[in-house]
Image (cartoon, rainbow, N blue to C red; front, side, top):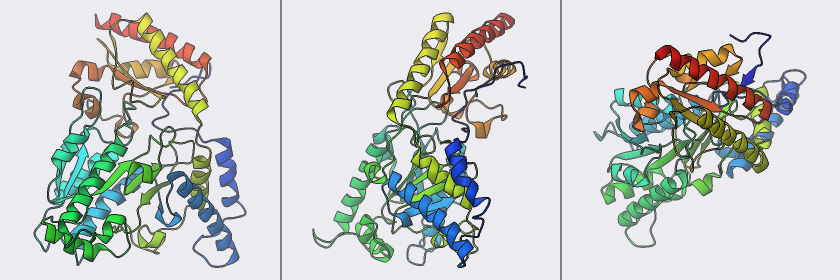
Length: 436
């Protein structure tokens, strides 16, 4: 679509980001002289493993967790699959906790606005006989903590709620949800304990605690050990506090290519003491949770990208650009609607609906002018379906059809924004003229 004579402006950073030159520099040695297999014990392998260990430490420092709680994956999609599918299948097959033998259906709670990498996994789990509750959101796109609490049942095994919505940029109350689940678990264990000082070992994440935990839970009348809490933090890493202890999460997914790192690499924070059934079997890498040859260049790049996470000054600059876009567009065009909470939102995201036009047509016209935006999740592009996120928020089909997502990055400039607004106004006016 892009023509050489046109400007090329990238405003789709929620889909992917350009790689930071410093990240590329950190990766290159592992594609050239340090190319050994990190699982090998000879000097080439040891050199590569030092790169893996360095990145693991960088990520652990960022997440405020132990290095053995960082599991490398191929990206957030795999991390989400491993967290959800891996835990549920473990519950179903564990000799101690076997849900199948006990005739119990595990129960998952998630939301109606999840990324396809979570939504589709939960649907797949339903086909395997798992019960799933999809809680709704309000018109601002926010999940209600009380609604999640109300959805908890005696067979609830897992709650998975995204940190930042990829379409609207709305920040979900992850810490509040985590604290609520933690409080619920402690109350369940307290009821199960034979005396006030007796606690569930698994409640604090102790290794090998599953049998004792299961025994206490059965005494309490619950059908499974404590409820685990997973969050997909893919869109949050650049802008939000991802301290796993602060968030009170048990599992957390991240991706490299959303934070100016390489594609094909991600990680899963897996709290000590939690068991997962692997999705892939092989060489027993990552403590047997995720087999496969280490992607050493990608891992090194992910570690460096985490180290370079943008600072508050970058956030302020991006927010000013975002506010400039909103101010100028709403000033020059009537019937423009901002989708999602502006108060609980990352600074890089704008989701707008334009009355009387088709969002995909607008996206194509902007693309012809050299500007890249999106109509929603990049993973669902081309499906021609209405955004499940916007419909869950209560938008009419016409407004959902007329939406686009604009997501800014650290390399965007004021001049680019001026050009974008100019071309967007022209395109919207042209489309409305055709429609009338």
